[in-house]
Length: 390
Length: 166
Image (cartoon, rainbow over all chains, first blue to last red; front, side):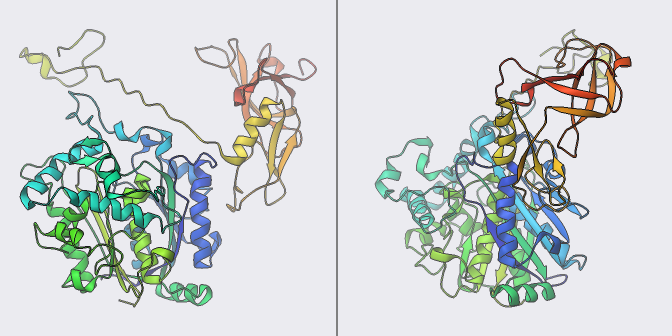
């Protein structure tokens, strides 16, 4: 991987909920920031630069929120950088923060991603009426449902696969105290009987809308070792980072298995020295807002041959007890503050290789993948983190 | 949709060729938001409903009003809310002579930075005064409360000169 070594030494998350009306927007972010700084045994004074990311400004009706938030984030007199790549932004933001360290310019970088979905109806925010834009008033699920149906047609996957993913992720969420949805009574049957929103996506196979924020502290090699010596918690070393994009409306684009996602995965594995991801990766946090995206991304990211991803779901491989656990945190299906969701995947991957994931820890996890996608399945961000130095 | 006639067509020069109108259509975007105020701004607006004004003590001992959740210099959390006075001093001002719809006072008035007694920072608000000659930096002002406070900054209807013209 190019550049200097960089590691995650602090992870801070808010409690995620449908409405966090007990805090202001700055207060929500600071809840995550101070937890990350505490985890890293650092204070705001130790931080050299801040990188923030969120989904579109009009989701909360605040233009250039990074300017308003500078004082709240301890950024007075420091570089402050904003990233925006739709739903993948949390991942992209962590990668931009990593480059601040890899470049050798900064030693300790604080990065934050957030969303308050309760502030507005984000579901419908992306649709301007005809004739200014193709009409997308179906919402995100309506947009993605046809591609899921096409996946099912190509792969002949049984109908229950989506239900199995939702059941797994919601049960995993019970082990994550920060997760938004805690549904101890959920069953295969209750998911199967839930309202069909956009066939084949049922209500219980859909992500919630959440308020929440996550912050990470990234550090150079010397700073990471100093932090680990102080906190007693090992760093998560970054072994590879990659981003890819493709135009939403490019003709000939395959939205079931997009080229940009395949190329993003190939790039990040090459950097991390991974030639057999199914065998070499211990745990995956991938961006699955609708249940069927687990098998789709298992194929897109090279964990299964094309058309075979659903078999890993069906045979239990992606369960916490399987050989490729996916979304032990409960994933986007249990918690979705959109702008933060990508960074939560990246942060949960770091928690796993640091041995800090609590009840949803995979014992002995050494290599973890964090993955995010956004827009019309067109923006991709990934990183590979490990317990050993690259 | 044909070009309508309620304004100039700014979409380009192609309409001059006489080969049809350029597309023009109304685009109305309505998008309501809900905000959360948090423990500090929430306390400030709640106090306004009781016709009192709160500031907060910063790390250097100064009282910031309106209050903020975190120190403006260091970012450290702030907790000590302090009640300040409903009287204060103008630290800077400008005169608004032409009134437009939606302005807080429907007569010529001053926009002023006002440092309330007990606070070390100034807030922007309106001073209802008979004319610019009555307003000066250093002039004393007093809050005129709204008749029915609701827990919003508009509970301070405006400021008025304390003891008449200065």
